[in-house]
Image: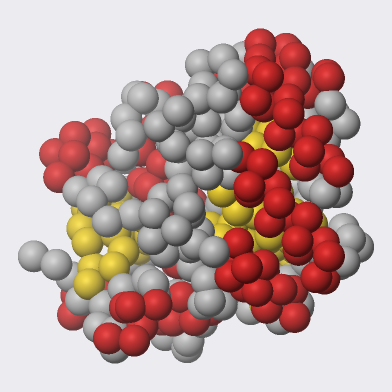
Length: 372
């Protein structure tokens, strides 16, 4: 079997004005790899995330090659940002050729996994224009729907205001046995980086709210500060979503920077690289709970976490309140045969057991909604 074509392009799905105003996902990028055996691999990702570079740079390297030689291809140039989407599509081909889900090819640790929601409210990025009462109401509503773990941003000018939201949630719905709560600083994304004293103060305050973890407090180039914080506080300190390859995670693990590592299945370099990072963390006794996604790209995330013995949760990011996850990705179901591929019962999602990444893609729909 040989690769005959590699391409990436964007799709625009129709949606009602209400769906668009609420934050439903109506656009997606797709990478498609064709073979001379008639097997087609797909990977879904952010709009504009690959595009011309896939066609101009990666396709000439891969056309005519064996789609199953994934490690060989990865070693050609692992620095290419476009590679992870292509690699997801190659795993889709491998699973379809074998008649097995990718999770089984990678080891098959589980067929179901609990999920947690990462909520980002519409409006200002720091959520300062979102009344804390609304955040508490929305989190309580998700808990009533059966979700037992929620993460939200700690971006307000005074981070203790975000901690106060957690305290109010505790008063409304109860302790960790009802819902786990996580705070996400996302390192440099808010435009400012915490100093150690701020991170320590927030961590201690969040402990009092029975928080589950505090994520990415410091600049992503800083290995020592998170290690110092992790050793000083009781609440787990987590991070790693913006890092690529094994080297940085090896440094984190050796320094004990994080109590939980969170590689992103695309950003870290792809499914195979994430599997390696997880194994490296397992050797240190550290959980690996990957940074999440939403929409059809979730297919690759589900397959890889299905093979990680040291992963206990899958992140659904970004959830836009008040939408439920399946309401948010509903427009994308037009790209598939047979409706939603992701089945959530209570707080647990099923890992699709169909071949490859588990998506039954409607090729006619792909062409219909393709953006020229």
